[in-house]
Amino acid sequence: MGALAVIVTLWIATHPRLSGALQGITAAVVGVIANLSIWLALNVWFAAVERNAIGLWVPDPSTINLTAIAVSALAGALFLWRKMDLLPVLALKGAAGIVASYVSPGI
Image (tube, rainbow, N blue to C red; front, side, top):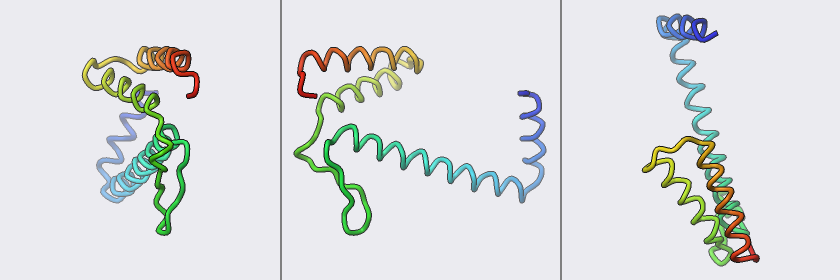
């Protein structure tokens, strides 16, 4: 199956119109993923998030969840600086979340 993907990719690369369309689709997918990432982060880190007059998501700073931000920062540090794989980071992040829920039960 991987060889077929390579052949199709190389074939598309030789056709400029298809290559341009593929780049447009890739840009759209990246935009959707970025939008979902921002939306998810805002809704995890803040208890109240609303849209303003121009349609942007604006969090209520008084509802910040510092524990969630700390656990997210831990995951980011493990990914970027320790170069850990996804599954061990998810396990450590889950364990950190469970410990945090016992330490501060209000989260």
